[in-house]
Length: 254
Image 1: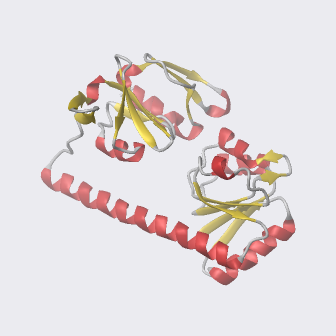
Image 2: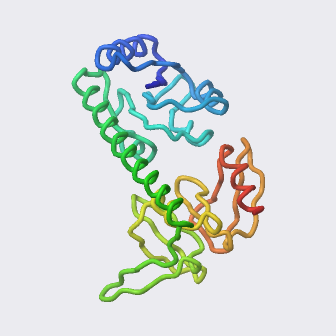
Image 3: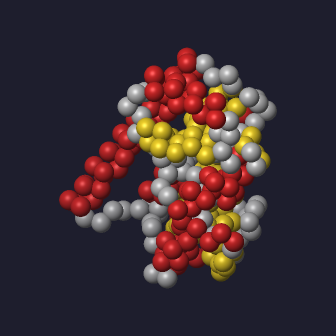
């Protein structure tokens, strides 16, 4: 179990390491960083840990800017003396938000929460693995071709091929059609990745999945990222991370 600590005060790093050693002695703190710059540089070149502890205010700014420069996919427990960032923290990969000075009981509760989430994800992975075995036994996987859409007093069917892209906002997933109509679908983006054809749909980033027929063009962006232009308007600029750059280009060229 590998842990990374992002904290700009040596005392707090040592304190957290000691608390973790007591609560979970089998865990290993592999790295610690005190700045946005050093964190970004490390994760551009190295794999991510199982869990990250992150302070909000670092020596060179607010740690949320890390997420604008590198894709962080591991769970995070925030540790900070400031409570005004709590809502923003839970918009990223946050498991919990602990206020300093840290208490052993609060830290242990946050760790148990992380372990509970991880256990559920592992069970889901086992379920996906079993499903893949069934696919191998029974033939090619069948992907979702339509969605049931609930209206005010009736239901309609929406064909997957009519959907230009999906996006997530406040834990709600929306499907936007080529006709620029928006519908709520009862699936997370993670579920849709499994349900949709990999030939037709691609997970661009944390918020968007796009139909290949909706992609007009894409271009290089700073930091190895890409900007993707869709034929149907979106609420914001869509980028593909450096880590997904090659996979996206390969998908587009199939």
